[in-house]
Image (cartoon, rainbow, N blue to C red; front, side, top):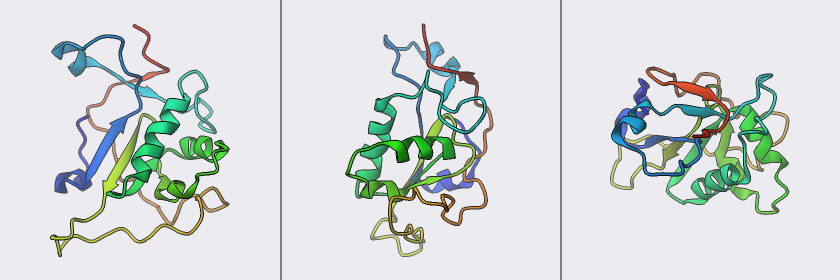
Length: 158
């Protein structure tokens, strides 16, 4: 994914598409022309039930439980879907914060390396799972802005 935001330039940030795994090994041309899959419903209030699967929750949970991950940004509709999950293991959800612009991917911010004194860590997330009234966690501006991405609605069905 080609993006123009500076946070990715220091090597501590990565965007991970939520596009389903294809049913075959992609050619170079297919990889270059592949579109990301929008996970958010048209009304923007929830995830698209035709696109969102338990596997999406599992991959975000796995990333959030990694001790090297400091924060994960997702669309608010995705956070809402994660909050509905009834799994009693919810501690990881405090790292997952809603942030506009993350309809097709989730953004992972890694912790500062111990040997990097100039690196400034994120403030700790508020206590709890982040599913209360204030989902923004004080975030007011986007971390990710689209550039040369191509998007499509719903899961890939080739």
